[in-house]
Figure 1 (cartoon, rainbow, N blue to C red):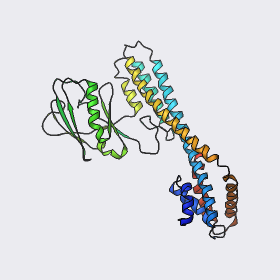
Figure 2: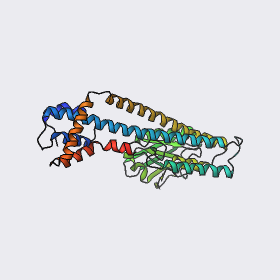
Figure 3: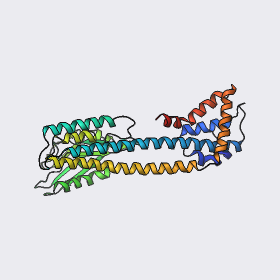
Figure 4: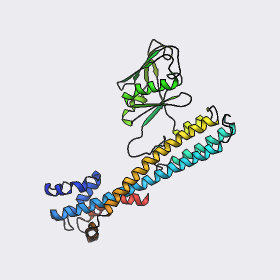
Length: 341
C-alpha cells in the first residue's frame, strides 16, 4: 500500500532504514482505524515515524546480538589455537611427533565442530559471516608449479573457464618463490581474484561470490617452458579450498618443524585478530545507532498511545482486527527474533 504524496514526503527519512516488509507493515498498521476509516495524514505521519523507529531499534538490537555472538566465537577460536600452540613445547627444530600431530588434529576438529553452528557468526575461513554470500575459495593442483625458481623464463596463459576471463603470467628466470608469488598475485588482481600460498607452495585462489564461475569451472592452461608444456591446452579443475582449520590440521603432518607449525597457527590467530577489530568497530557503530534512537524520548508517549490503540483494535473483533494483528507481528519480527536468539 502506497502513502499519499504529502505523507510520503514527511516519512521518507523514517522509512528508509527499514526492510521492504517492515515498511509495508508500518504503513498498513497506521492507515486505517478500528472501523476501517482512513486515518488523517498528519496522524499517519506521526505514527509512521514512531513505528519506524521502533522497528529500526529492534533490528539494530538483533544485529548487536549477532555481533556479540561473532565476537565470542572469535575469542573462543583464538584461545583454543593459543592453547594448542603452547602445548607444542618440543625443541623448535624438531618435527612434530605422531602424538603431537594426532593431538593437534583432534583439537582442531573439535574446534571446527564448535564453530560449525549456524549462529557462530564465522564462516569456514574464520571470517565474520555477515549477510553477503561468503567468498569462494579453491586450490590449484600441485602438479602445476607456478612458484619454484627456474633457470629459464616462462610464460603461462590461463583461460578461466567460460567466464571470459584470461590471465597471462610472465615468470623471469631466477626469480624467487616469493617474487613468483607476487607476480602471480598481480596477474590475477584484474580478475578480482586474490592469491595466497602455504609453506608447501600450494596456491589458493579466492574471489567474491559474484565471480564464483572463475574458480568453479575448469581452467585451460597453455605455456612456454616446463611448468606448462607447449602444445595442446591442459584442462585443470580447481579443488574447493578446505576450511581454515582443516588446512591447519593437514599442515600438522607436513610442517618441517615445531616452530614452522607454530608460525602457521599464529597466522590464523592474526587473521582472527583482524576479524575481531572489524567486529568491534561494527558493534560500536550499532551501539551508537541504538543510543541515538533511544535518545528520542519524545516518541515514547505517542508510542504507548499507539500501542494501546492497536491493542483495542485487536480485541474489538472489527473487520480490521486481523490485518492489525498481522501488521504488528511484521513490525516486531526483528525484536522477537532478537529475544529468542
